[in-house]
Amino acid sequence: MNISKTRFHYWFAALAFMLAATVQVDAQGRKKNPTSKLYVADVEGEAQIDTGETIDPLSKRSVYTAQGTIIETKAEATNAIVFSNGAGVYFDPETRVEVRKFVQEPFTPNRRDMEVEPSISTTQAYLPRGSVGLCTSKMVAGSSMRYATPHANIRINARKVVIESTNEGTTISLLDGSVTVQAGKLDAGGQTIESGQQMFVPASGGPPQIGPIPGDQMPALDDKVAIACMARKTVYFETQQKETGGEVTQDGEEITAFDESEDEEEEIVAVETTPEDIPVQLTVSAASLPAGQNQ
Image (cartoon, rainbow, N blue to C red):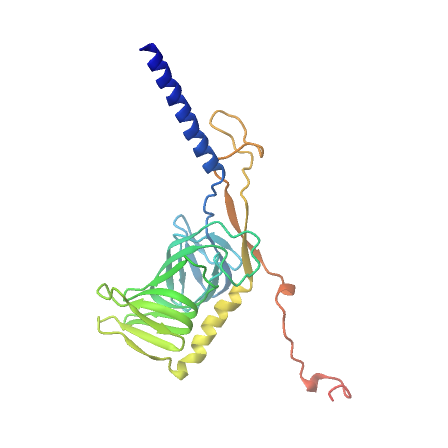
């Protein structure tokens, strides 16, 4: 009987050791998802950001944790921000956007094409009022981007789109790509519109109206997405190992760079582009050249 108990304890200990080793190997190779960020590329007029802890005036070149923030522009104010998945967003005056979810997986190492988003991402934003122009990066497989209004839920697979939410309803103007719009809870499958089309979802609950974008609206819509696209060129994002800063364990021992951690933590940092990074085309008028050089 004692021999059986000894064998049982032996095999139990061996099994526990193997399980612990497996968990440790898995933990050493695991990376936490980095905290997603947003970068303020431009601000004109009065705008603010609610981080959930403080409400701050929006200032150019500032960086915030994106998820959970609420961004508002006041009357006669505009701004442009860039999310760390490479999506640029232009805000019209009197616009409010709630970033309800924005998460990213660890970035792809040594990426070369900055037009492609750095990793799989999930975006869920709410636009109760106002207008935004979006200029996105090329989304990778597995990513999703959704903007909701009081009248519609928009699944975006587009490079350039403008969404406007008013008391009358929601207008989606698609300049490049495709989007699927669910108009109300009963519209389970949604309707897809393509480049050059516009959909209006009335607040009254009537059927959505789809047609070509009116020609007289195109210049203003182009301007909104152009500003969002220009904002994207002012910054790019990369990850770096998060510094421990001499953290101390509960038993008072300092953590050093040689200590093993269950999770490899990375943080996303915004890297501003310099003027040399963006080529500028200068046009010189012939009238401004000295005589004899304008031929």
